[in-house]
Image (cartoon, rainbow, N blue to C red; front, side, top):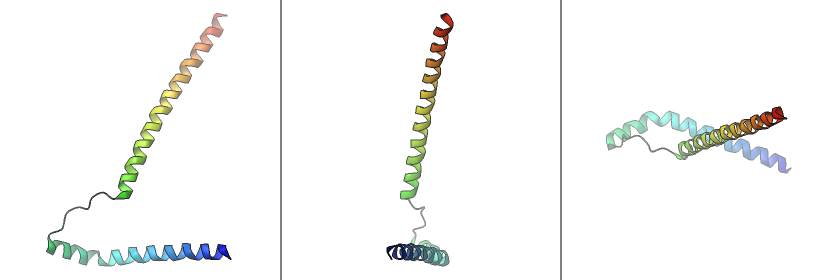
Length: 88
């Protein structure tokens, strides 16, 4: 029974999100006109999603840098162990 409630809640949220997107799409023309009349035509500030996207991109860059450093370090260690094995 709990699974049914979980599923119905999922579809209810999804329907509400689609309804919000539809209303936003239909009223965009009117909101733009109202904003131009009120003089509020400026670009919106970056939202939460944009900030999270920037944070994730920065995290990917740091992880990539650390990965390349670890690979270089491992290559150096392998190269040194091969050189010492060749000396024997």
